[in-house]
Length: 138
Image (tube, rainbow, N blue to C red; front, side, top):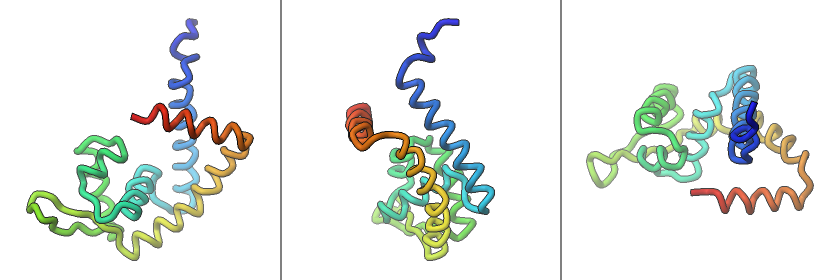
């Protein structure tokens, strides 16, 4: 088998992320929390609010249709609210108190998982990884 693609660092980084998200979803489900993708969207809403659906799609790298479905789920659960923006076509999204409570619970699950992964790296390796990721960010 050719190593080419599988040896590519970007491909391998994607595999690491995919595996982390898979394990995070299992742990979040076990704790009765949101899925990892809903957690990320709710996290972005909290820290960028009010935020438009278009900006959320851009921030999370989800398609317009995918973000629309996810926002609908969060709204149905009472975790976010939509508000009319200056432009009638542009609704702004904010997090609710229930959303903050749900997000806090998810963070209690995800944060230790992230820390555990980072503990595998030395402080200098963490700094180097951060620099590399900043360079690769489009």
